[in-house]
Image (cartoon, rainbow, N blue to C red; front, side, top):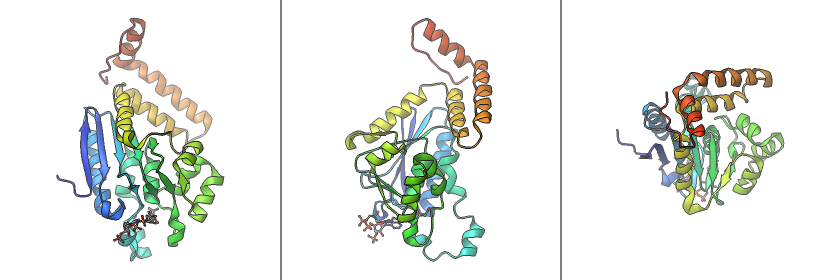
Length: 258
Ligand code: CAA
């Protein structure tokens, strides 16, 4: 299937999805969200892929849900469609790590999409914001929940109630962004992180991601129990034997995802 609103490529073991609606600053409409979900599902199914990079243009990662498409929605239609479920959730449901490479605007649903990813790299030009309040609504793709967890209540409240944007620098200081990288290196750097992750044992990567995410879902005691049992289970893999033998033999491990 040819895509119309995104471009998709594979770089070694990393799947790269670029949001591509420049005329609308990559606003997330139904067509784009459907294609994004399809692309992510394909990379999830592809045994050669170990991580996915999600990026946009220099000017915009994504300027939010498509306001023009949403403007005439009614409440019953929105409720019955379960508008923010379905394809909106694709990135957050991926089991393989997803890295957001953000330049320019990451607003509303675009900021929420970045927050669904596991790692966020950004350029100096990145601007994060949840301006839904200026449209008479509130964030609907996880913003009120994920932003609080990422940057704490004070900053999240100010951004969500006033619509204030955060610079890349502020977002990095606050913990929303893992690293700021030069404009020209954004995609390469994100792919490099993806390649590094893809070189690890996939069962360990899947468990590590799920275990970190568990920290947001449960009590510390339950989370520690979860981590411990997952840690124990990894001793059932060939990759654990390989990884530890390689260390002892002072050589590079060659993981086979078994
Ligand atoms: N939906 C639809 N179209 C959008 C859009 C969006 N979210 N954001 C930008 N566009 C369109 C503009 O309408 C414009 O199209 P036309 O040329 O046809 O008028 C084009 O993209 C370029 O945008 P601007 O001319 O506005 O560019 P700018 O550089 O002057 O401003 C901006 C950039 C500050 C990002 C501004 O476009 C803007 O404020 N966009 C909306 C941001 C927003 O409110 N996002 C939240 C959406 S609601 C949401 O996401 C709900 C949710 O929780 C899921």
